[in-house]
Length: 286
Image (cartoon, helix red, strand yellow):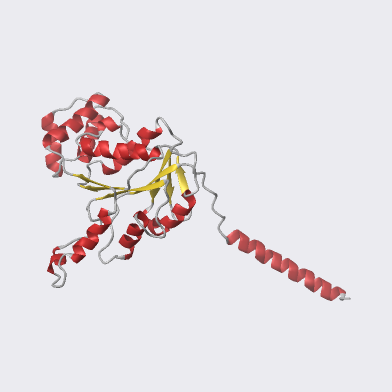
C-alpha cells in the first residue's frame, strides 16, 4: 500500500500529464469538417478539404459573343456531363481575355438553372494540384456529376512530373478520374507546357520533345482554341453589353479604348463597358 506522500506524488503527476494533454489538444488544428458535396453549386478545393461557394458569378451566355463555335461545344459537353451521359475532358486554350474561364462558369450556371443538383463546379486552387487524387477519392462515391476546373494551368520548364500526372488522370493511369468527373482546363498555350526553338535542334529525334509536350493536349477529348477577336466581333461584344445595360456608346470611343490597350478581346470590351457605366452613373454586375 502506497504512503500518503506517494499518493500525493502520483496525483500531482496525473494532473501534470492532464495539463500537458490539454495544452497539446489546444495547439492541434481542428479536424476539417466533412464537405457536403450535394448542395452547393461550386466549391474550391484547397488540398485537404473544400470550401463551398454559394453562387457562381458569370456573364449570361448571350453576352459571350465572337466565340459561338466554342460556346456551342462547351455548353453541349457540360450538358451531357450533367445528364450523366458520356462527356469529354476539355482544354480551352488560346488568346487571353477571350472568355475561356467565363464560358466554363456560364455554361455550368446555365445547366444549374434547370437542374441545380445535377452538376457542381470544383475549382482547384493553384497550391492543390498535387492533391487532386484525394479529391477524386472524395467525389467518386457521390451521387452527383462534377466538373473539376483548373484555370490558367501552366507547367514550368523542366517540370516532367506535373504533365505526366495530368496524362495519368485523363487516361489509363491507376489514379484516373472517376466516371462522374470530367476536367476542364484553361491555358494560354495549347501544349500547356513551355515550348521554344531549342526543341527543334535536338540532333537525335527532333520531333520527340515536341510530340511529348503535345501528347498532354491530345488526352483531352475536346481541345478548343480561342483567338483574338476581329474588330467587328469586338464591337459586337460591346454592343451586346451596352444594349443589356442601356448604355450610350460610340464605335470611335470603343476602338480608341482598344488601341490604347494594344488588344481587342472580350476582356478589353468588358473593361470599356465598365468605364462607360462609371461615366454614366450606372452599377453593373460582373
